[in-house]
Length: 499
Image 1: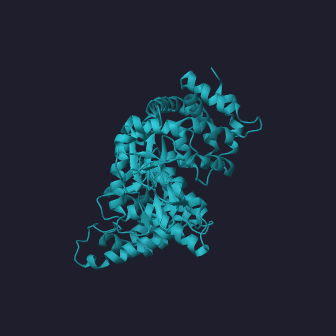
Image 2 (image 1 turned 90 degrees about the vertical axis):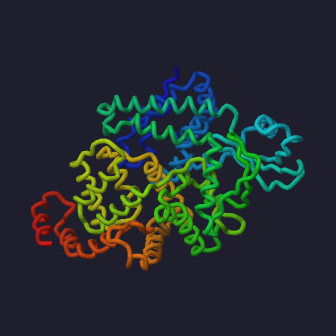
Image 3 (image 1 turned 60 degrees about the vertical axis):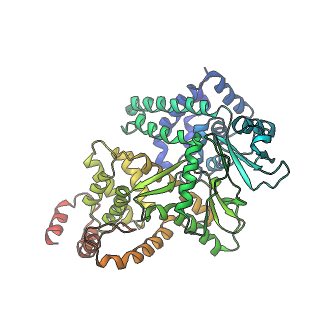
């Protein structure tokens, strides 16, 4: 059996992780080795053959990229973190290649796949029009025509790759093994006790949707409804024929968002704002009880069309933000605005999916979060994402699967937005503007709604607004007395009593 540690060494792995995450080098190495070592011998041979094809001078980033291309689960996880600004640029460069790969299947193989699922072209009237457009982690995208082999290809077929369901199930089972291994070695590896097996189980459930094209078809229809009123956004329209293994849809003409050259810096900023408003602000400020969001918004799934619209592709992996979760997000930001460490810790605990919370650890996380605000960080989504990460790592807070996916989407989009705007735009600017717009639109309704009602886009009740305004003197006192610092409890008690 091959010793994967000889390929994925600790020093090399440490070189591609940021300083604050280098304490996780050993767990990451362990997890990758358990995963790769659990693959069937034939598949391990495939991975090793790809490694041997690389030059001896290949970096670890190049080797990890090649490993991810051979494993659907690692391919998908690589796409998710490819734009995460916290990891080394050389690794991000390799992982970005996973966003859209050149097809490896021949047109004859693709035609055979289509005919196996749809029947021969003579009966289904589906004519493959080469070349294939792209190959993703589980599927191939190829143009087709319903008229003839020479007809215009105004549609595409997304077809599952041969044998992909079996390969994916093999790897998803290995995620359970990785989680159990980490749970058993938490103390040896110096990592928090977080019930990693359960976390990986949540990831498994979501990744299984990747090969459920019938569900993706439902998601495409829901997304089309969700964005119907926004003429800046284009969702591929469903076409016929569709099956559980084949999706026929409108062909979108344009270019990958990271390759798009805007006419000027202002156009770049507008595009970045559109991405944030469509993929983050729209779900957060949606009036729907359950708000749909795209869970895999890497640059390969975002295009700028020939007419300048933002096309959002690949709706296999989606999530939904519940009313409770959106209220919780807003209450965290209100707690930060009022500089109330106790309230911030309590609201963090309220987002916990299940299980007991470590109150002392949450209090520490809240204090650390307020300390970042004291250092000058804006209390927006970037700050909030770091706070949720800290709560998960340091306090063992367990989030619902969809909220976990939303955190990952924020990380992905943060990198995408920074790149397409040239670093001049972040998540917070666009979200703040959308918050102000939503608050203004809801303002007339506030005059006849009950004080505790949160039936608004912002999920902020009239009572919340009143309490925030009345708490400003106390909040200023908390700031000047150092509410986020140790040893201030007695002074804060005096302040709260006076307030």
